[in-house]
Every structure is written in structure tokens, then in C-alpha cells.
Length: 391
Image (tube, rainbow, N blue to C red; front, side):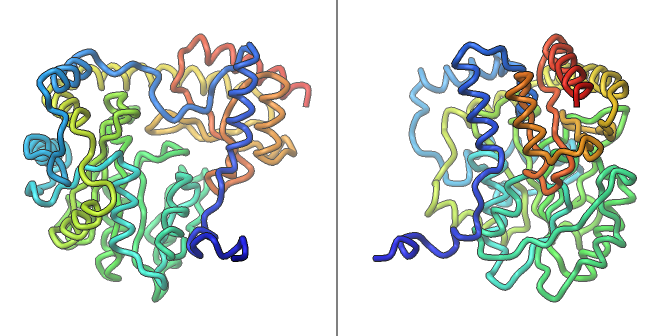
């Protein structure tokens, strides 16, 4: 058997992470005792709250360690329905809720049941790194919609209209977004929703950063506007960012009944149920007041403002102030370096780790995470400022 026939054809569309060399190098340097400043993190640096941990421990000691229903426990799904209604003005029945192994798994499941080989998924650029790869795993095509800093890296209804083809099946929206921190207004989403309804295009609305918005901006769920867009939308969320539970792997979605049933069947034969203990922890998270989440958001706002003030003083780095999430997306085009070279040299020469923009489809940008302390932000920015001055 030839080596190129050993693997499935679909995997030829999947690309290894362009950041693998950077992250591997950072780990190696850290193991050698180097003082690495980590601006690459895609997760809050806060520990999971104690009351959530205690719920998980109680689940273990009480023997709640067996299989649960594939789509999640009735207790958890009921709370998710209540959350959707309270926070998002969305009415979902429990059988429309699928609890999965993280929001990434939820998005993958949704794409798997919607996309055929000849279909296209529309993805605004910059995009979260896994969106186009997931489309590829479905043997579909990713079609990108370019955005600019002038519009806070958001697509307009006009942009969307221009990119629709006869093959367009799905639009993936992420608000607040990774990596740019963009937040769509209600009016912007209403205009996008109208086109999706007119063209019968499904929307996967990735709302994982919903709770992290700044400057009084309100998050809007596109599915809440009317029944027509509701019937075309899969709303994805989870607890990773809002409750600092990235490793617990609990994500969920709400969807029209036929799509939810299809995802249930898929999950039956792929992963089965999400972790039983983590589901009990999720129940505790969704049952409690949002004091932790509010404090987390306030702290991220302080860090964003500090980072913005520092970046303003650095020549050849431009940025757009993020409206949500915890990333600063910076234009490095004036440095004359591509994003991989910029990231590699900064790590090797100043021991600062960040993510090259090529991972998000924009090689003239880099992503700085402010999911770290102000002290680390200060140390890292001192190094970056000194290094860029030498360039």
C-alpha cells in the first residue's frame, strides 16, 4: 500500500496548526528555565470558582460517575433552557438542547449535520482557527469574507450578499469574536438575518464570549429576532470563558428540533454523553449568581485599557480596541515582517509568546491575549517595546 493511500482523502484538506512551532518552542524555552511571558493564552487565567469544584467533588463522592443521556442530563438541559430565555430571549425546549464536549464540539456537530461535499460555509476573516478546518472535515469548502479594521472587523449585510453563491449553506458568526473582539450590534445582525432568511442560509452563532463585553455594549443573539431566523440558527455557547472552565469541556447548543435530533444521533455514535462530573459542575455554574463572571469581565476591561495605552506608544503597531473577549488584534504590516517571523523572533529574542495572525487568515497581524495579570502585561510590553525599537 502506498503511503499516500493509507489515510482518508478528507484529511488532505486539514492543515497542521501554523502556531505549533511557536508554542512548542515556548514550552521548550520555559522548560530550560527561561522567563516566558505568555500572551498566547486562549483561556482566562482565573481559577474555576470553588463552588463549581465542590459540586464536581460531590458528584464523584456520591457516585455520579456513570453514563448520562447522550445529549446531557435533564437537570442541566433545563437550566440551559432557562439561561437562553433569561439572557438571550430564546425559547428552547429541552429536546432542542445538546450538551457536548466543549463549544468546539458543538460547532463541529452542527457543521457535520448541515454540510455536504458540494456546500460552502461562509466565514468572516479574521476567523477562529478551527472554523475552516471543520468545514474541510465535512468535505465542504470554506469561503472567506474579508473585513477591515475600519469596520471593527465585522461583515456588513452588503458584504454577505456579495459572497453568497448557489453553494452557500452556512454562515458562521462569532460575536464577540476571536481574535478581533468584535461585537455585532442588533441592527447589524438584523440586516444579516434578513439576507440569511431570504437566501435560506443557516447561521451557526458562536456566542462563547457572550459574557465578556466592554463599554456597556450588549450582546445580541441573532436567533432571537423572529421565527424565520430562529429556524435557521444554531446557537452555541458554553462555560469555558464565562466561568473559567476550559478544561472541563462543557459546551452546548440550541437548535431547531430536526437539527437537534440529527446532532443527537451523531453524538450517539461518536462521543456519547459529555463528562458526567463536569455536567454536575455546570449545573452549579448555571444555578449561581454571576458574581464571578462580572468580576472577571471587570478585570479584563482594566487589562484591555492598560494594554491599549501601552500599544499607543509603540511605533509600527496599530490596533483596534476590542469590544469583547480578551484579545488585542494588532497590525504589524509596518514592521516589514510576516506574522510567523514576527512571532518566532519575538519569542527567541525577548521570550514573549503570542499568536501569529496567519492562524486567523491575516498574516499582517498578531494576536495578544490579555488573559494574564497586569504585572505580566507590563513585563511583556516592556520587552515588545524595546524589541520593536531595535527593528
